[in-house]
Image 1 (tube, one colour):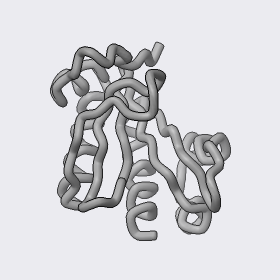
Image 2 (image 1 turned 90 degrees about the horizontal axis):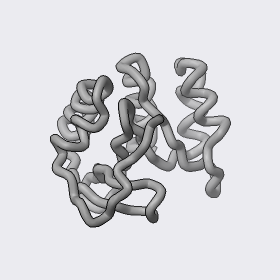
Image 3 (image 1 turned 30 degrees about the vertical axis):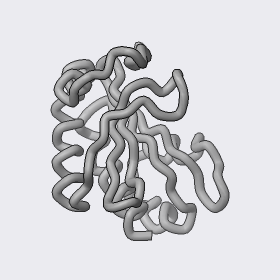
Image 4 (image 1 turned 60 degrees about the horizontal axis):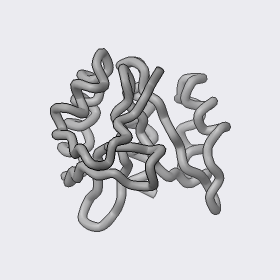
Length: 137
């Protein structure tokens, strides 16, 4: 369940990543459009962080990293670093699912790395809020 594309020798297209995400593919397309349009982000398909992360898309604006999104079987995961102060500014407006992800973050300095698995379009508004506060802080 939620397997990733881990064969580094087979570079997928963006369309293949979306297709692999199956039912959540449309949600990824919606998020992709939001990030690209809002932040004038560039996309790079890559295989970063070692063999357990697999193929994904790096979103960046100029030289600033926004997030990575990794294709999973019937899901996708948004991977990004968020500052504690920035996160606390939206904490009261997030779903319980998002708060659980924050509580289980990988700590790093004043904040941490979130592995936000998107299982449905219901998670998109929270992901957008988190990306917004991350890019504005």
